[in-house]
Length: 113
Image 1 (cartoon, rainbow, N blue to C red):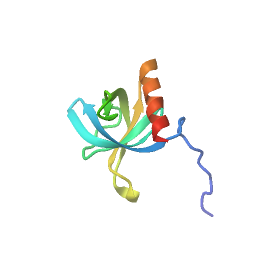
Image 2 (cartoon, one colour):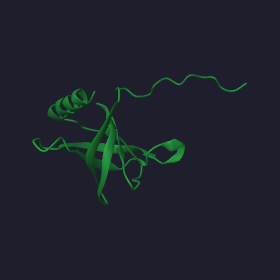
Image 3 (cartoon, rainbow, N blue to C red):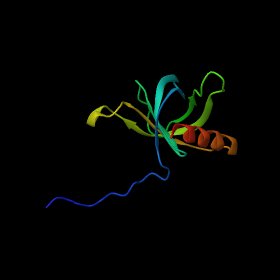
């Protein structure tokens, strides 16, 4: 018989599907992309270039013409390929969010939900 173990959801925060123009600043320069899902703990950003897991990055998400972009420090925790019909891109975990950044992120999540 096959393994019928049910794997619990590993994410600590619920994800919201979004489409936000974004920029991932890496030690090797900026990469344009789109944030496709977002939570209070991280994001998945479609990108054309892979970045090594563990790399510290800065994610800039545009919030519309009338608002400053939200800029958050993050770490690459997963590099997604196009296997299984997924988008190529980067799974990011936010690190060291200030209270203001966390509040702005929650506002983005609330308006996207």
